[in-house]
Image 1 (tube, rainbow, N blue to C red):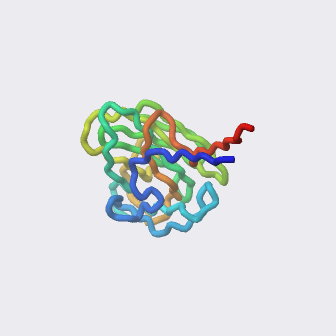
Image 2: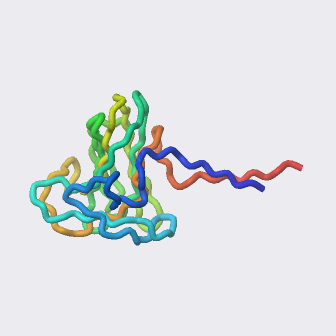
Image 3: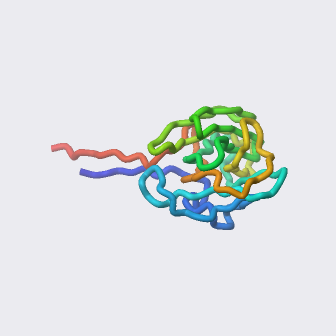
Length: 188
């Protein structure tokens, strides 16, 4: 019996270490710990901590090259800590998607193609949206604390806002969940 695994192309480097700078950039946010229990049971989820900066955006981001005229899915597993609203974004095209990870509801979508939220075990949510990458230049993916639907500028409260795991950018309209495994039984 053979076990086959497909590991998807993720354009985000070090996606289980979002405190590694570079390639990650931190803006009015930090990732103080990577020891939270993730949806797969490992201790690889991170804390996304907003600082106390006023009238600012609080996020982690990473640039990537995704190819011209390619549909890309930006996703992350997110667990509510102190905030309800979480935003995924991209710079090229300029697109954003909001999610209430306290109630499991999608919010506004600006400039993207599709949006979705999927409940996972232990109150985690897989949040995602798709974009059409329209240039052969670097695009930046944003994983961002939000105070409300459609808003990203606010006064930070110096708190742990969310737990985040496997922030990703992959090809296609749907996120790559956990590794896809199939079992093949030899014929006799």
